Length: 488
Image 1 (cartoon, helix red, strand yellow):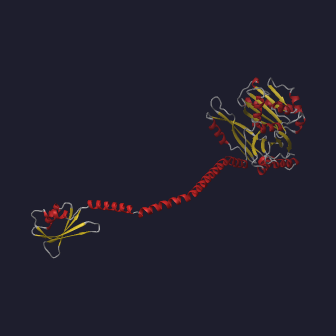
Image 2: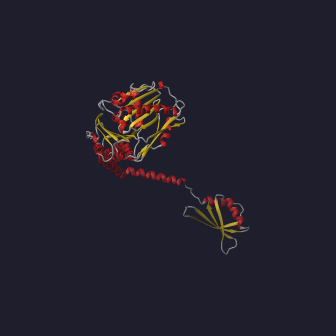
Image 3: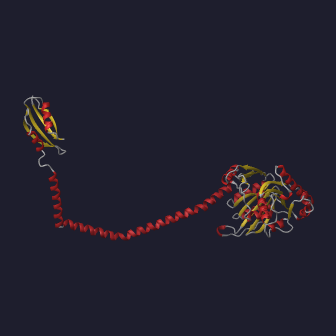
């Protein structure tokens, strides 16, 4: 049974992690706290006693980080080329091939096989898929999605994690650096899992079932392991690749009994490292994880996956975990602008309050100033000298207006008429008036002695070029007209 981890700040566990490896045979659940394995259990099916313990482990540690690792025999891995391009486009192409989602029926995933392109600039991505008709896997995923959706950090594939472990073993000197590496492990959850690496990249992966009788007979199991690694070498040539014995390295992680039998077999000059789970733990600097006589390496693999930076490269998710991760990311990112907005609003509020207080303090002073200026203005208006000066300015303005006005605007119309020489009409009357728009209209009574009225009108128009001339015949009179003169 998994113990309850210690509570930390905001309900978080102090380094508490739960890792679950699921295969065809069942699931291994490992609970670690601060890098120390607190408990582990094997769940064979839903409804068993161990299932209740696994459920209690997840529910009681729902604030812990939870990881899943899948190792079903139905998993298939195929490699596909990508033409020469940059890393961003290559990753985009791989992402479009699959959404990397896991459901109760299975999963599909696509990922680049390396962080750098090939010599010609091309890339390679791996497409992995699997159908999961496993009630235990569905139950564990539902359990974590229901009780700890925000704690599920990802779902990994054992094959890709074995690639990371093989690279780490090479880096630590426990496995020679070779072009081809065959890495085989024996787990309780999924029996034998074998991966082949080419230049540190995943080339192939296969699961090998082990029967109950074979588990009990180390000699038989060692023969099966030996045959599988030979099949792996044949698969290299079947894929159109070539190899030399000096270019191949093998790492087989099996129980002590199987190791003793394998040491007596011939691997045809290939460099082979046969390790027990305990020896693999020592190679990876994982202590106090498994005992010397451990048969399976599930715990070592899970521990490396969740505690080593080289692990957890490819992560799949469910719909529920994606939604929770987005909400958690939004919460982390959104807190920054929210705090900034609160700070800005608080600052503006403080400044506004300070300004209001400042105006409130200055209000009596401003009122006194207004009253003082109003009193001085009233005194000026009542001062005799000020009145005299004001009257003087008004008299000057009136004088300027009168000076600019014409002394006798009517004379401008009469003088030209008087200067006319011989004329064929007599002026019988004279009057003038001022219109509403302040225009002066002169009205003349004219009696034509000879000629026509048009001729008289033409003479007047020539003499009074700056006036508008209009002649109107007097009713019941043959040669009497009224002439209207209006300044144009």
